[in-house]
Length: 122
Length: 100
Image (cartoon, rainbow over all chains, first blue to last red; front, side, top):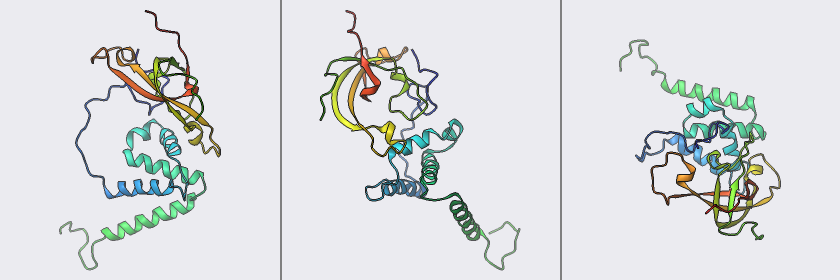
């Protein structure tokens, strides 16, 4: 017998998965931050999240997001959803903050004053 | 620690339930029969913890041993290979003894 079609999307045990990637790879800084964030939010003093809630929120992302997102992107999406659900942050606060970060990043990429725009060199 | 309902060596079947929410029982073992390998004590119910339950109940947890060739129809490993899963008691029911 194989895996029952009533399984939920994330419940992939027993499905064909191809070869296993065995190479070690270092985590990107943002991935380490997401990991640290989860640990801080779920520690004993803060106790704002449980790993069980994290899993539930990841499972509820839906098949498309679940497949598209990388490991820590799933964490980030799930942590965000849970913090909104628990009123730790609110939607407009998050929107403002995301726009501010985006602007900061754009400013950092802007060529220094005086340089010719559109030359594409240097 | 509460007394476990199923002693070591008892044959148990995993309930073939498919609720929509967060569960800790992989679908590939549901409806399958295994043997109690050990009793692990009680733990807060993760299916309640996942939904912010303020006072989750403590559930008995067992390690259940399954036969790999029984689990997978095209299993290519050894006949004696086993797979062990940690499962909470509400997912288990008694199974009849294996026919000789």
